[in-house]
Image (tube, rainbow, N blue to C red; front, side):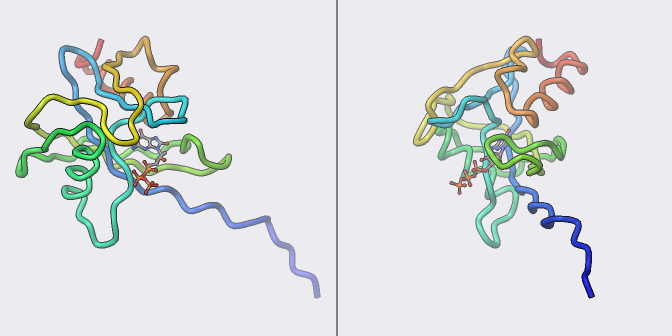
Length: 142
Ligand SMILES: Nc1nc2c([nH]c(=O)n2[C@H]2C[C@H](O)[C@@H](COP(=O)(O)OP(=O)(O)OP(=O)(O)O)O2)c(=O)[nH]1
């Protein structure tokens, strides 16, 4: 008997966390070496890691600032097409706001850091475009 297979199972979504940080009407974004679009600072959790620890670790690795424990708050969860992955791959990006200490500067694998507004949306990965649009509608980002 032949069974029909509808094709390969969908790729599991990438589950990641990110920091949403606005200053003077612009959103902090980073571009990793060799990648063409901007992301929010963030990345995947390590096994067993809480979202708060993961976002603090990734932000420290990528832009060298310390997030203040106790100020990390959920902002939005975005489900979007993952950039730089095979067609159809989704990213589930849990985004947080948080107060920080220090001045963000590009570190480690980050080639470029930028403060972006809605006019820059084409330079951003789809998940970042969604956050930019939401912040612009709320009047928080230019
Ligand atoms: N941080 C972040 N990742 C995003 C965004 N949009 C988007 O598609 N992604 C995808 C592409 C990234 O490769 C992935 C996040 O995981 P990552 O690869 O940065 O993870 P990581 O820092 O833990 O690095 P690694 O262990 O894979 O080397 O999610 C975004 O706005 N921010």
